[in-house]
Image 1 (tube, rainbow, N blue to C red):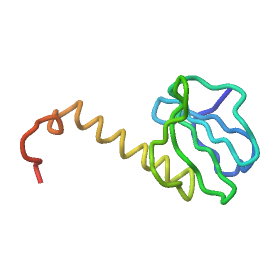
Image 2 (image 1 turned 90 degrees about the horizontal axis):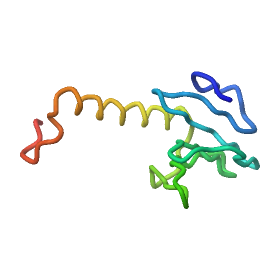
Image 3 (image 1 turned 135 degrees about the vertical axis):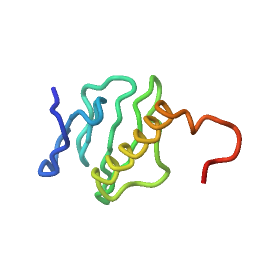
Length: 103
């Protein structure tokens, strides 16, 4: 069904892979998703070759970012950074206080 890691050599169809312990899908221009699960992260390529990033919800597709990404790798970098913030919050708890930020 999928594999570990994104393969940038694939340029058409649908590619499923695992990234940071969560399934992600790239759906290239002119293709559609036949199988999906709620909560999946999906990159939809548009006709300009850029990618919309979002999650599949019960009744809709929810955009994570307001503008399209230039590449899937750019989106994976965003998701990795987001994951790092969550991890730091879980480890230190510094991000959950309502006081001043530590910078």
